[in-house]
Image (cartoon, rainbow, N blue to C red; front, side, top):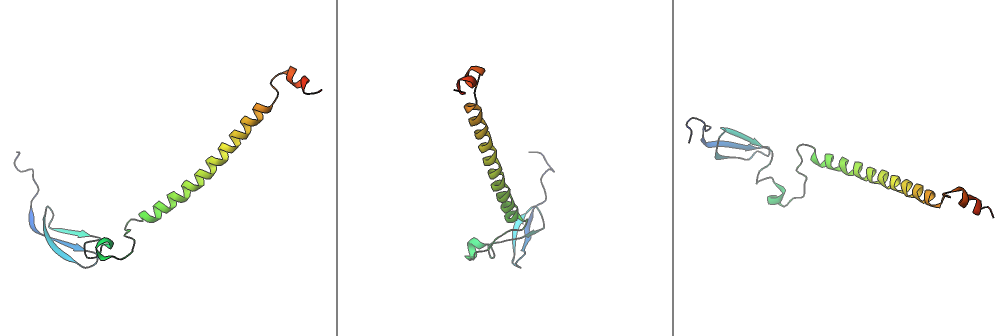
Length: 103
């Protein structure tokens, strides 16, 4: 192994959560700040709440709205294409067919 490439190890690194909980662990940084821990995480507390620090829920909801709008647009395009193909299929293909339809 190469020497002097490993980070400094802090056996008593302090971890502090946004809820106020603090504990110590071994880490490569002397102090770690976290948004959520075992004391405030919904899985451990049994509470129903969104854990959203970066706006991911809202971003997902906007993507869902855009997706549903695009699905509607694509369905309209598909319908127009189908109608156009149907019209082309029903249109006379030659002068003879046009004249045969006059009778």
